[in-house]
Picture 1 (tube, rainbow, N blue to C red):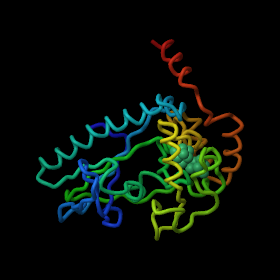
Picture 2: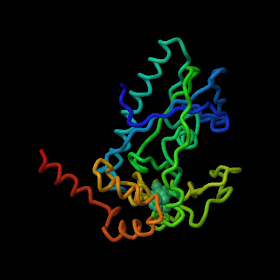
Picture 3: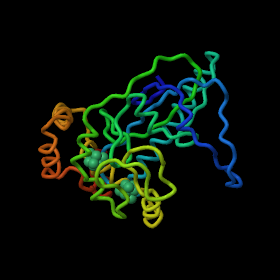
Picture 4: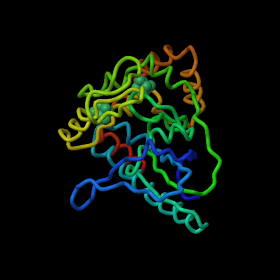
Length: 265
Ligand code: SF4
Ligand code: SF4
């Protein structure tokens, strides 16, 4: 009703909550206190525009992110207030307060990929997440698998395409290259410091690893849905080969996007 594309529910898990937060005036650390008694997290997914994502890295593609954030903020605020009106606690959150990726996986919204993103069945990696912490009694969803881990095991398109080589090759490992990595979890871990340094050098968003991912497709049509199903079977190597051969994931220049939209207008 309030406009998100995906929704799942999982148990509140303190392991994913940040120990501290930054004071927005002084940038000093301050406690990240949440109220007692929170039992559940509602995780919401917000799909990003397929055509804009094709132009990553660009300021134009940054509009896809900005539009995502704007829509998320409205949805989170409205649903949080709705829950509070029912008499329960509701703390809305976007990128702040806690890691959303493990919660999205636990809530059955997708699988974790080599590119550090949750790959959803509906949008692939082209999705943003927000969350609401609550004590509203809710039934929990379960993690769902559709072959992403197995596909990432044979694919490294994101790692190959990453300009500063911030994404890992090989199987998931524990730990990471620097203090920005989470310890104690076996997973694919990026060198986030290399990644974000690249963003600052470009002075724009980079999500090449989202654009080139074979799961970054428009799944509204039956052909792409069939391709997604086959990617989860023993035919995954063939599907990967076809994806590259057919030129999916290549960058579309922002000027082409503007021209195509002028024609539509
Ligand atoms: S966002 Fe860009 S720099 Fe960062 S991991 Fe992805 S491709 Fe690499
Ligand atoms: S590009 Fe390939 S390896 Fe990277 S996340 Fe997508 S499927 Fe996995």
